[in-house]
Image 1 (cartoon, one colour):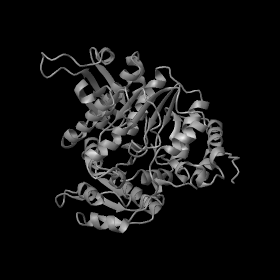
Image 2 (cartoon, rainbow, N blue to C red; image 1 turned 45 degrees about the vertical axis):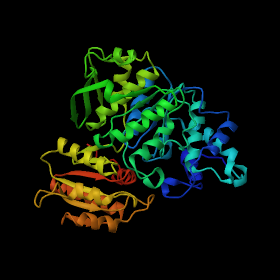
Image 3 (cartoon, rainbow, N blue to C red; image 1 turned 90 degrees about the vertical axis):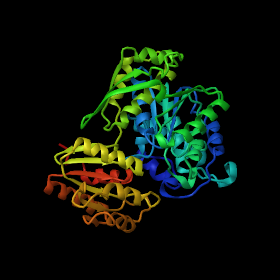
Image 4 (tube, one colour; image 1 turned 60 degrees about the vertical axis):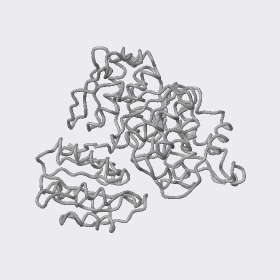
Length: 472
């Protein structure tokens, strides 16, 4: 039995790392019986407050942050649960744009861990010990209860149906864009992955669906509509409710104007919920410090969910909340001299968006890339997007392939070979710190923008290495 006299939240993290952690590639069977058992023992700390539950492949972190920030501006004391963390474990359990007090986190950790410390596997349902993510999630719920939160925004970790967070009863569920991801866990088709995400749709509770890619729309929406019908869940599809105009993307963030969608056929009844119609009357100007056209869609989805969850929410609360919502390593510009961009994009589709945003903001500026990704990612496709172009027209003067730190398993040599198929300007520097320093030097020498992409873990390591001392 370990002592639970934690001094800091970092001590809690060290303790939790003794348990199985899927984020490190360790294996477990996904199920909810341990979560339900432990939550009951703790007095169901996940219940008793307004809840927004969010799943999806892309955009769920941004949407979580926007919703939580707007709820806070609307007068709710709001807890925000996200993953993975960027620098420190305590980032997962926070207030919008603000840390929870250390004492609150430590007390919540002791409350949860006192139940499990020293217990044999046979004590738990299925005769298996709880996982790192299950315990972190329970600590989050207990911390929000101790902090007196009246609302919580909960982001799923992996999938939805069997995700540890899926014991909540949401006032509204949100499902963002679906992509092929985590196929070893969630299935190898878009329909299968959508089915796992649809697991957060609850009986009689509304669900808001985000913008889907045209090639995926028919498969994905069919799953969501069928699930919602089976569970008598009112379904709101943001693309059918909100028209987005005048999207402006700058280094300071993204802005746009939103209107209620006009039916394609005038004779059809207007399907806009009254509370959303009120918010969009005469148009609504919104902005976010998060960079990229995709953030306009994230704002539209967040607005839809907020209108459903809190019918009386004001335009001012939404606008203030979105303008304050921040998230690290989502095309985050951490320096202007030289421009340094951290982007945790790690799928071909998201890398495509990263390159598009880079070209929008820095069209004439040379660029240097530092890239790393976990072993299970589609590095061949990402290499083709980042390095594949006509000779002499390469977007990146230099490409440095490295490891995403030591947390995730990776194969930098293999990734290097993928990039070498498309570019002669690629080098392998396996040591992450050496790679980041080399990339910084090259960007300074060439007056180039430095893009660090492919993994949130790489971006986290890079932020630590740079030490923020280059920010201007």
